[in-house]
Image (cartoon, rainbow, N blue to C red):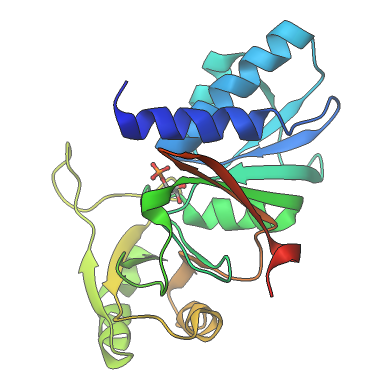
Length: 231
Ligand SMILES: O=C[C@H](O)[C@H](O)[C@H](O)COP(=O)(O)O
């Protein structure tokens, strides 16, 4: 396992240990939550826990099935705790997410949870958000119009293209992603709202005022940052 994957494994296990018997758990998307879901599956098996997962993507649904976690939907249950990864985390625990194009369902699931825990390695911790482009999910018909609006707002939007597919990435919801670079995002709350009122935009990857705890893995160990401890 690479050094980075060891950190992801460590924080995934730490988060899996937080889950209590009987809970409904939001299952985030990405390479870090992959470890969380697998560790949670092991705990369910070894401790005979009664836990249901609510996936945030086809990827997390498939990993949950492989890990032996039964899944349900937000239509059926409220979520006790959601665990998810992030692409950037600032000092106020605001996030950029959506590197895997899953941020729309992630924001719904994560914001619906009574407790939202983020797991990252220390490379994701930043002073200001914005080095990572903000993923903006748009309906395909809105491409030209929203691209122009994003440029007018000071962004540099790029249509995300497939790696093992010709043409644009199509999200789990059948849409496009405009990865939009903004220089140092000073007011993430404002930008999050401004992006979402553009007609044709479904959701953007800025998550503000949602996180309760961040678990950060580094070569020197694991650190937990709680919202209630922020000054
Ligand atoms: O759309 C994907 C998600 O927001 C991921 O949680 C995020 O991109 C972090 O993924 P990873 O843990 O693979 O860095």
